[in-house]
Amino acid sequence: MTPTNHVDLTAIMTALGGRQAMQDVLGVGASAISNYVARGSVPTHVRSKLYNALTARGYQVRLDDLSIICGPDAATSPAAKPMILLIIGGGIAAYKALETARQMQRLGLDVTGVMTKSAGQFITPLSVAALTNQKCYDDLFSLTDEAEMGHIRLARSADLVLVMPATANLMARAASGLADDLATTILLATTAPILMAPAMNPAMWAHPATVANLEVLRQRGVHMIGPTEGDTACGEIGSGRMSEPADIAAAAFELAVKRPQTLAGKTAIVTAGPTVEPIDSVRFIANHSSGKQGYAIAALLAARGASVTLISGPVTLPAPAGVKRVSVQTAAQMQAAVNAALPADIAICAAAVADWRVAEARHAKLKKPDHQNAAGMQLTLIENPDILASLGQSDQRPKLLIGFAAETEDVLENATAKRSRKQCDWMIANQVGAADDPVFGSDQNHIMLISETAVETWPRMLKTELADKLAERITMEFLT
Ligand code: PMT
Image 1 (cartoon, rainbow, N blue to C red):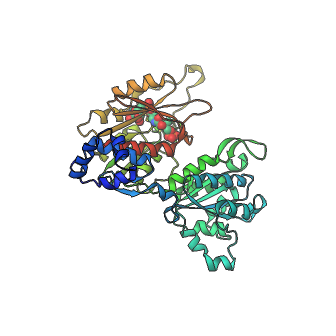
Image 2 (image 1 turned 135 degrees about the vertical axis):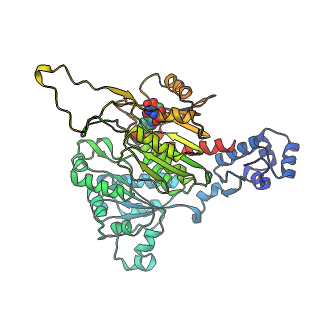
Image 3 (image 1 turned 30 degrees about the vertical axis):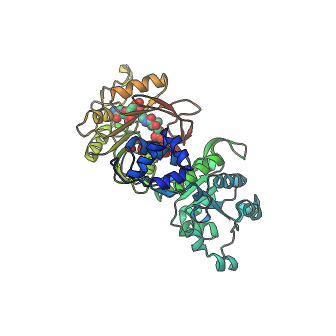
């Protein structure tokens, strides 16, 4: 990208609200604007200011020539609105679908409701139709619906199918590939991404049948949000409570809205998940990383057009669409995979790499010490390679190198020191391990982005939202 690239300044001026508005955005006088218009190009620092101003006003803008892909009105023009097919399952949390529909509409999404028969025990098709301004579909065999909108066409018209509450029954039927009502038929026929928000009694959620169904659905690429811990409708406390409408709406938005291809042509390496270091043939040292943060980052870089290699420790998540995943177990394997993926423009180390491994992992199962000699088992640990630090020193150092610091105390001080020790451009500090918010395994995160010159504190948000914001920041970095 060079400052001499042609830029359509007239279109940008119109989008910003005129010449004076452009002068205000750039902090320059009328003659500077005339010069830019005459040349048809702007210097690099002006380019980034214009990009910021346009995206802040809701425009989607190409990174290379600042051409406007779509305006903020995309959210209000029916043709351009992403369409969410909202399948409402039969659970007490069904009433939250109405609030979620409202929140999705606020985010500029179009919503069409589909109800299962048992959802009708909790809410009415009329209330869904009134809220969404669309017919609410509930019958596979309705001739009128088949004439107006066949179930296949309904399934194909969606940019995302959202199932909430995803009851144990609905998950089981979807996992088995049944198509015995409109909801399950749509789930089989759709080619759009599917997002499920499970809600059920904690014992049902923990039941091996549900665990197996969840695994099947995940392996097929179905996205899950929640459930969370807390009081459930049946009065029991545990995991099974549906995520909040705002979180579900935000996750739906992330999956449904196509991102501008601002990172097309860029290559990225993302590490994610834990590493697992063997002690013997059956035991290991690991940690609670679920991979959610790293996978979300890989997904959103790929959604912006980057070519992404995701190097992942063992997790249960499916590989995000369009991402090349390399699965590893140990830190040494992760380092080898990272080196093999070089060169890259961007590397983001979100993996929780074990700092140590057992010096001599046994091939057979270690025996307990006998009782007369029960001084305790001693394991000799040796330090693992530091993948991020070695990337920082590499001849093939990525142009933008980003680490994550998982800290339990003195977060800013420790993460700042880690940033300079590991020679990365940004260190993203997250406070982990709190009883109410461990970050490890949860759907949300709360970070500080530490660069050489500044510290940005980002509000608590979904890991997917954080990944999207980070991808946007990375885009800016390549612009300036
Ligand atoms: O996976 P989730 O459940 O979504 O949780 C996300 C997360 C908490 C794991 C993630 O946000 C996070 O903080 N990842 C980094 C965890 C970590 O190992 O932090 P650290 O402070 O120990 O390491 C600092 C950096 O050095 C990290 O980028 C790490 O990947 C890297 N490192 C550490 C040790 C090592 N031997 N090699 C490394 O590359």
